[in-house]
Image 1: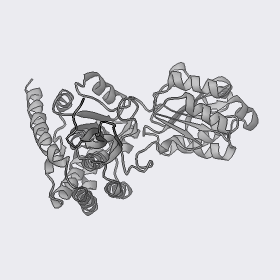
Image 2: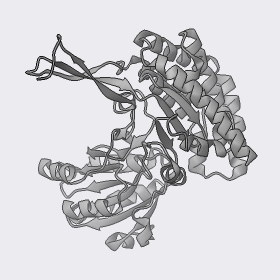
Image 3: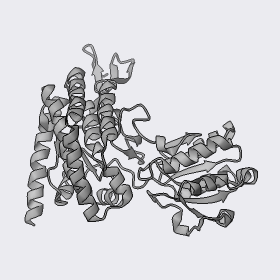
Image 4: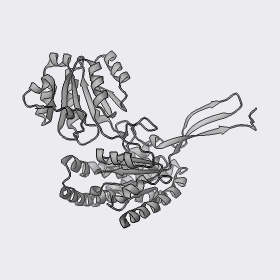
Length: 421
């Protein structure tokens, strides 16, 4: 009970500080926010060795905990990934400031002029696992959108996240913005997560970024609104009219580029017409790349495959494993995705405009792609600079959650002594 009380008191103090500075951030100038993010990017590069040393400590801790190879890959930092963190901060800095943007405006016969303008949400809580880069991405996007943020990284990434957070604070100080704008929970105590989830009236929205266990916990226990996706069960459908070489490139990239991310393909659907025309080439490419293919139907007869179990369809492997089956046409592919998908990202490989239009029209996942890898399901690749996560719900934010998605709106109504009859 004492641990819970201590965690509750800690989060309580952080929430009070966050709410206080959120009021100031809501009207902070675009120039100061830009300066803070550029300063943070410079600080990340200047303290690269410190960040790598902290990450080495985290990797030892993660291996002792027995984390999976995919989780350790998410955790690991190197020169390239640190450079990417700095580049992401600069990319967010370069984005248009969403706060105060006029979404639409109109005049009424009554004489009123009405504007709908973007406004910050207030205080955002981000709970994440493994990836220390989320510390920078989430902090940057929250600041850009005029929000205060409370970050609770995974226990395995505590040292790395703290080192990156120090760089973020350097940027805030240089721009004369309050350090409480970006706060990092300084403890591995899991009670801090529960305290954040119950901070209704203090935290305006929670964004979980991690595996099914974390997101499920947040969705079941949160007393505040949540932007989340439970799983990234992404499908790639090779239509009968797919271009063979495009299909081969996209399928391999969608599965193997990085298996531990939510945009990794978990199921390959091959149209029987494609299979009759081109044979087992897509499956063989995956096998040759070291992917375990859990195959159904005629695909299970391909040497090297493993017979699929029913539960392999609709499963997020986050590993060098993919489920595969044949389908008879786009409608059967759509039916399979509706049954087994998680509403994250689906791709169709086809040269038929009509078939692609049917796929886009009849599926309602957050992201639908044509002749492109599902690994592009990422805010940075969508031109948002970075993302806090991919939201698969249908309220407020959907798809990559960038700075614009971290705003709400308000109405500004102007009259001229106008009264209602």
